[in-house]
Length: 122
Image (tube, rainbow, N blue to C red; front, top):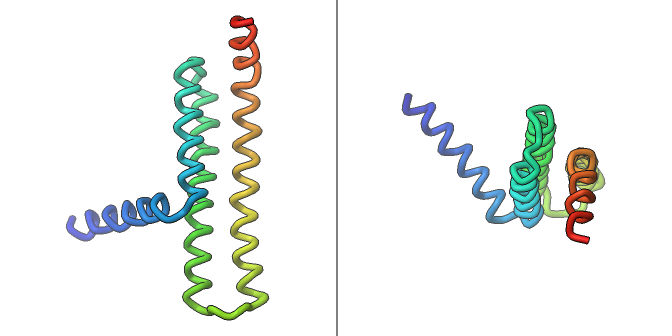
């Protein structure tokens, strides 16, 4: 049981490290909070919550993998290395793809609702 609790402790330390040190992670979490608030406000359905949860998880975890890859590469070499650059660029590209998909999912879920809400005020 002790080792299980230690595993959770280390996992939370990784999450908190990412939030504390990675600007993009804080930006992603901000958007998670905004989209969650929008979901509550617009009372989205279960399938839409599922789509948001999956995209949230993909963006957050890919950002954490990106950080882990960057730190590992930096641990191995401080000098410019073509392969190190490729590893970092590919990891960053994975985050970008997931973030763009998340934007598309957010658009599909919220755009019409937002337009309708704005039209009420005009």
